Amino acid sequence: MMDFSLSGTQRELVESAREFTREWISPNASTYDRSGEFPRDICREAFKRGFMNSHIPVEYGGKAQPVLDHCLALEEFATGCSGIATALDGNGLSQYPVILAGTDEQKRRFLAPMIEELMFSAYAVTEPEAGSDVARVKTIAVKVGNDYVLNGVKWWITNGSVASWYFVLARTGESLTGFIVPADSAGIVRGPKEINLGQHASNTVRVTFEDVKVPERCRLGAEGEGFNIAMATFNHTRPGVAAGANGITKAALNIALSYAKRRRTFDKKLISNQGISFKLAEMMTRLDAARFLTYKAAWLYDHGEDNAREAAEAKWFAADVAMSAAIECAQVLGGYGYTQEMPAEKLIRDAKIYQIYEGATEIQKMIIVAKLLRMKEVH
Amino acid sequence: MFEDLRKVVTRAADRFKRRFYGSTFRCPVCHLVLAAIDADGNGLLVCPVCGAVLEIEQVYGHIVPVVLDMEIFRPQPKARLHPVSTHLPIGLFPFALLGAAVLFLVSLLPAGGGRLALAGLVGGAPVLADATLVLLVLSVGFSALTFASGYRDWRVRYRGRPYRQITLKIVCSAIFLAVGAIAIALHASGLVFATGSGLMQLGSPLGLAAALAYLGALGTNMIVLATLGHVGGTLVFGR
Image 1 (spheres, rainbow over the protein chains, first blue to last red):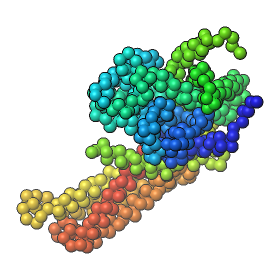
Image 2 (image 1 turned 180 degrees about the horizontal axis):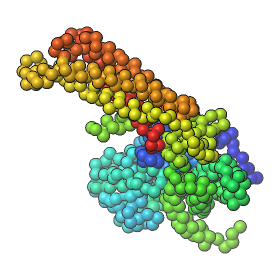
Image 3 (image 1 turned 90 degrees about the vertical axis):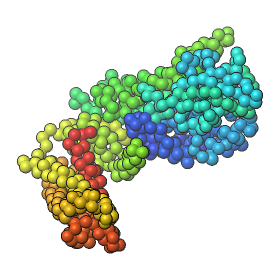
């Protein structure tokens, strides 16, 4: 049986997330985009309303929110501003390795406090010479007594300068190992905020580790398990990234539709021109397709099934749809789409990152091909 | 420290703007920040700076303005009194505040050595106090002219349409006039300045209270005047 309807709880979640977006995110999107400040006041309000860290397991104070529900809310937030949505959701990427491989003590120490008060954490894996190719990570962890000593540079770390702790992937001999590193450890240097093309409200910085001592009890899993932990995290988070991209598509469609219905050219409404109206039809169809991929990838995860291929499909497809929708939105707005006074140009800048972070589009296709190679027939 | 102060002021100003203006957007033609609340029942609003006739609609909290028309012929009063008169209070008032601040600092000096060291300034205090009063009277007096001419411009040039900027200017002008009048009354009453020496009477509790009220009134008016100037500037230049 196939059921495309949302449950009552899911509908309530979407409604409340939409209301929050209209009240807090969209009206402030331009301000944070221009200032580049971290939207702490919006995060505080989201935290109060229970929109942050809701995937933390119940035994540690969270709601163990299913991935599908998370995607539904995230799509709403990203419709207001994907930069602010990233700030609200950035914790998940670093928390999930702890949920997946952490000990009870680690979960109590690092996850439970994030339910009590507004705190941030960061996933510190990417390095200047190791992006999509995670196996190239150079940061090294050397065992000295009961501690590990970390040295290395982590790069483009979301939430990097506001985090209370980091999930760090470091080399221990030939293999990679995950660590939870408190941000107040001696030897951690946080760099300035990077000035990126878009998502200016999201905090992205360089984090340098210089002889940072990490107790053995902060190691995540066994030595050498880090790569698998880091990769497994993406099966959980990629549907969320796709949902963020869908939010951009939805914003682009709404803005273009609102404009086309009211703007007059050649003595008729802009939408009366087929060249324009077909763009809107295509945007709507692509949004629906991207959503179905996203929801399916999330649903598979929630049902304990392997979703690596579906998550990759959702992530690359939704990212490409968002990019093209943002560009088409600007096209519908004409010259006004090219100015900073209208929201379209921001959507273009914000959309681009979805084709890059958490595995570039090309990496997603490699994942899909790897799965195809193991199939005799595609059903 | 200066940076911290700037951040605090910016945050306070932003909070005030959010509350006073509500949802805002930029005119896509002249970039003036406009309040969505100023649109009429049909969602229409004419930009006071460039005359763009805008239809606004909110989708998902995003305000999407569409330029429907441009209001090219706008009535302009022949005698442009407001732009001229507005510079008089803005130019004169800061010097009144400066005079009062200098007099306050000189009055703080101990009666002995400190005042002897600045004998020239102490001797000139009566003249400075009189000059401060004159500047104060002129700036507040001219602000009445500025207010009246601004009100006429709003009725004629902007056709009495509601704009949050104009509302803010009217409120600030009324505050400037009222607080300015209080400052003049305090100055002229003899409660703040001693007759003869021209120095503030900080020794007596009543004199100290009057002096602080006087300086508080001038400080408040300086903030109000800066706000008026800034908002007025946006109505000329857009951004």
